[in-house]
Image 1 (tube, rainbow, N blue to C red):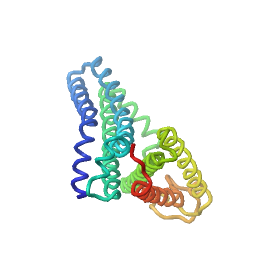
Image 2 (image 1 turned 120 degrees about the vertical axis):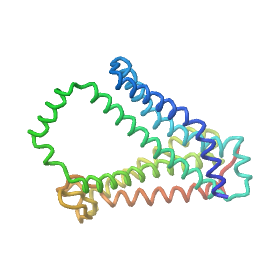
Image 3 (image 1 turned 90 degrees about the horizontal axis):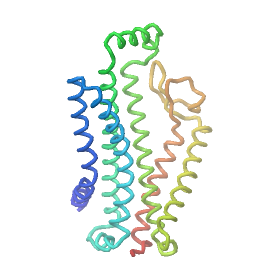
Image 4 (image 1 turned 30 degrees about the vertical axis):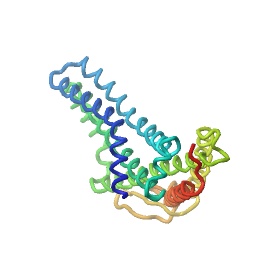
Length: 273
């Protein structure tokens, strides 16, 4: 049954986000044509539109995640959702997974968009000017300071995992806040209470996470030679990049706890309008 729920969620949400991605694809095609024909004016306009589309794809995903969860569970449509022959946990899992997928896609699309803009800007720079920039970078010694390809790949893995945990945390806190605000004591003003619950819980957990990162001597550190787990505060270690593990583990546990709490609220406490 979970597979059917996922299929339905993807079909329902794809109708909204497809417009953004189609417009970005069309604009990208126009930009590539402008790059080949050296049409500077079209290229500049296309870059501006594409940059806005990249930003809009992330913002629209946030709105979609919040709106779809609320409208399909806590409005009149919620009666249909909660009368399906499935557990509330299955409804929640399907929405979380679909939301994570759309967030990942939006970030990937946004990254590709800004990479295309970079290529476009680079194509507008005269070859001699570009050669001068490259020579300046070489003379400054910046290339020698860069880590190896393997180190960069490991750093990317860490950063991607950190972003994934951040997205999971955001989604779980949003769903928890909307669910708790639709219980009987708070239902008169669900959006106001949902916003206050989200802000309060997010501030508290992030404050605890920051405190753990600052005081707990455990982090992942990327040095010039290796990627390692170091028994030191992230801010005290000499590394190219470091992330405190205490805060990351705490935020992961907080996100999972919020999802369990949301499932329990959906099962026992939610009052459908």
